[in-house]
Length: 375
Image (cartoon, rainbow, N blue to C red):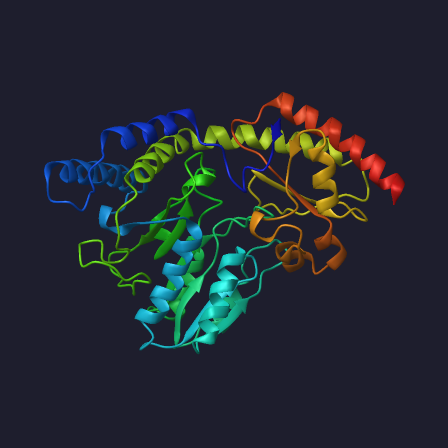
């Protein structure tokens, strides 16, 4: 099997799985219990949280565990908009977000909030002037993803936050960093809130984080027992939390070195497939190398995904959450329906091998030639 869909999810690393199994076997107490077994579990969670906080140079109290980035996005956007609705009723998002952000915005509109969509330039970056124009006195929040999940375009979050604060010092910046963390360096101090998932960086599914600056308050979405887990009440998922800490410790080692390795693999694919005039590469100079998006002309993306699956090679047509649909991100970049309907996404990781890329290229050329003849 050749797996090239790491942006959808990653396999759990053996070291992370060992941490999960050990925490499950040896820490059976409910962390909310007052007896010694509960305290033992609570101490382990606090240790894991301290490790995560140290990695990002933030406070442990700024780490909120969720079931994943989608829940973290919900908590960030709905929780903040509800908490600060006395300030206004307006949120701004980009046209390059994960589908979960748009679903949340639809819900916010049903509650009476106003949503604006900021434009991007031809390179995929947020149009700074359009952002300035759209910020109002009643703008509570701006949400801009750190790295787009389809084209890999990376946003300059620090600059975006500076623009926001200059226009309205009370407006907050949230970023979905799901496709950034574990791939490129990030600074959580560039944003007020951030979301990410463990399963994108070789951790288990079912665990994510919302980073929330301690300067902010937030309205909980879940109501539960009155304990110190007031933002997200319930029994903490100890094995998942421990596993996430382990996955992050591994993922953030030698990031620059890993990124250069992935870039070499990406460059090889581009060089080999550039011989086909009908193939368009949906990337800009701001795209990270881990994500390579192509448009195949008259061949639908999902058709090609299934053709490659016959070779035991796994890629995707766009994001896992919008598979088979028109690529909204490619539309936002190129305003070309045909181009957006024929996309495939190849996502590479630091554990992808040269041999896997060579076999992928060979299979790609075979299937592309066959399907082109049929068309």
